[in-house]
Structures are given as C-alpha cells and as structure tokens.
Length: 325
Image (cartoon, rainbow, N blue to C red; front, side):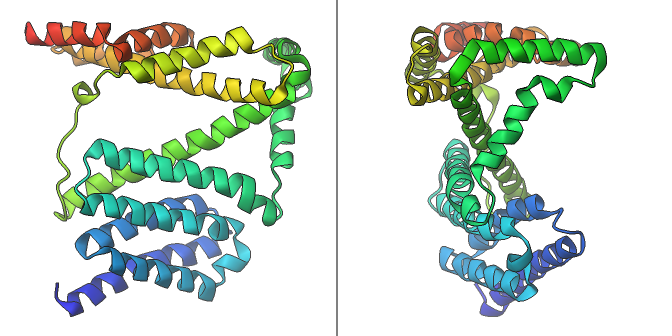
C-alpha cells in the first residue's frame, strides 16, 4: 500500500479516538465503556487494511495519546481496559489475516474479552483501589430484604423470595454470590466479544475491506460433547451442591449456570429454526413465537430442548423438516 495512504488512514483513526477521548473527559468519563469497545474495532479496521505491525503501532500511538490527554490519570477504566482492548483488536485482526471463519472469529473475540474481564476484575482493579469485596457487598445488599423494604406489596414478595433463596444456600450463600459475580463478569466478556464481532464484520464489509462470508442459524450444528458436558454440570450441581466445601460449591454453581445458559441458547436456536420452517410465511406469528419463548418461565423447557438439539435428535428432526420442503 502507498505509504502516504497508510499514514493518512492511521492519522484518521487516531483523530477518531482522540475526539472520543476528549469528549469523554469533558463528560466525566461516561463514555468509558463505549471507548473500550471502539478501540478494538479501530485496530481491526486499520490492521485489516494494512498489517499487524501497523496495528501495533496504532495501539502504541493511542496509548501515548491517552497519557498526553491525561485520560490515564483520571480514568481507572482506561488504565485497566486499554490493554484488553488492544489485545482483542490485535488477536481478532490476526484471525482475519489467517482467514478464520466467522465462528472462529467470534470465539476469538469472546475468549479474549472473557479472559480480559476476569484479569481486570480480580487482579488489576484491586490494585487501582476497587476491591472485589466491595462489589460482592453490593450484590449481597441486592439479595437482602432491606433492598425491598420500601417497595410496598411487590417488595414484600421479592423480600420473601430472597429470604428463601438465602435460606436455601445457608452458610454457603457467600460462595454463591462469588460464583454469580464471576458468571456476570464472564457474561460481560461474552457480550463485549459478540458486539466487537458484529461491528467488525459489518464495517469490514461496509468499507469493502474484507468479506467474511455469510452465516445463518442453520449453520449452528449439534455437538453431543457440549450437550453432555452442560447437562452433566447441571446434574453435578444438584447432586453435589450440598457439599460442605464452599470452593467446590462455587465451582459447581458457575459450571451449572454456564451449562444452563449454553443449553438455553441451543434451545432458542431450535425454536427459531422450527418457527422459521413452520411459520415462514407469517412473520408476525414468528416474531410472537420468538418473544413468547423469551419468558423466564420457559427456561427449563429451553434447557431440555437445547440439550436435545445440541446432542442430535432435534437437529436431525430440523434437517428432515427442512429437506421435506
């Protein structure tokens, strides 16, 4: 590529990030999260147009610009998350250069962000004066009856439900809170990785940098290993969940929740595929069906359906229905 064009593109990317950082400083850092998500996309676009070495130079320039602007001095989030954003951007760009499929690129973004969220939350944030213990205390308040004392009749119902939950876990409630917090941190990373992937695929296509191909729900195939691992994690929690070992209990809780979320995802994939086949000529009914199964009351149904789809039987059923059209 022409060197002048490369420098111009880099200057434009830096100008965009500079504008975001400056506006964020003027708005008391309310755009921290947006900038954390914008930086990897900028790196991905620039690295895809040039090469990884140029992307690393851009990373260094953005970090230096943040120091000059004083962002690092006033925003702990910038200090903690900029390295994560940089690694995600470079890692995803490397996958693009290696012609990874959309699925592999998505998993790359998710895994890097999940790992980054865990390191930032449990290692970097405590060094910056934001201990995990304070976060856990806030979560415990949400589960306590005091948080719902002034909410009237609905608050009384919530208070009773929370008290029953606390009684269910007993002296292992702290371990449950820790497990829940770790899961929330992990799911935040999953969401961030998915957002980065969606934005990158769209912008790479929109600016005609790289076409990563198409992907539909039907391309999400069954995987018996994942299915049995997830259902095994759920059963392990119920069978050994009363263990006196708080660490074991926390681990089982995390694994069970992750397993349930994965199976719910596969269950909803089946619902959308089946609805698309049966109701393909009635978009309104299809949307109503999809919204209907979003209700929490169907969580157990979706777990069972997801297991049957991921393990194979419902996947073969969908293939039969699709081939008969």
